[in-house]
Structures are given as structure tokens and as C-alpha cells.
Image (cartoon, rainbow, N blue to C red):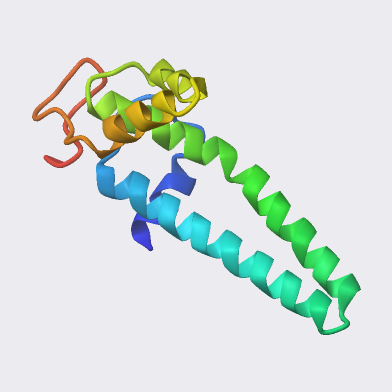
Length: 124
């Protein structure tokens, strides 16, 4: 949980570096929260509580929208940890190949020691 909260604390910090664990734990927990909200919203709607289901759906969409900036900031920092510019995230816009390349970059070990984006987060 601390990795998830760390990303929220650094939500607008596009500089520096982030560990793989920070990025992937944030992504996992964020996805799980989103899924639970949507599953409960659908279940409530199917049980006749359509109004509450709609409200919960709106909350889920709002949570997703609010989470975009911390996610992108952590994505940038993760790319920085591998020695790449944060702008490599745009490569994900290339159908199929771009997303695969970005996932490989995100899963790659970070550069050992300091690089031009800062100190090694594992060393801290």
C-alpha cells in the first residue's frame, strides 16, 4: 500500500526516478479499486438500485480520471529510471508495437547508480 500512496504523494512530480515496484503496485492497486467500484455499481444496478449504481459508476469514472495524472507522472519517472526520456510514453500510441515496447521498458531493470534523471531509487 505504501507504493500506491507514494505515487499519489508525487502525483505532479514528472522529474526523478521510480522503481518498477512503485509503478506496478500503483497500477495493480489502481486497477483493483477501479474494478471493485465497477463490479459493485453493476451489481447494485442489477439488484434494482440503479440510482446508487449510477452514482457509484460516476465515482469510478471520476477516480479513473483523477488517477491519470499520477499514473502518467509515475510512467515518466519509471522511464527515467531506465535512462529514457519520459516522452517515450508517446510510443504507446503506435498500435500494438508501441504498447509492447513501452511495457518492455517499464518492466526493464532501472539503471544502476545515478543517471541524468537522478539518483538510483533502490540505493535510497
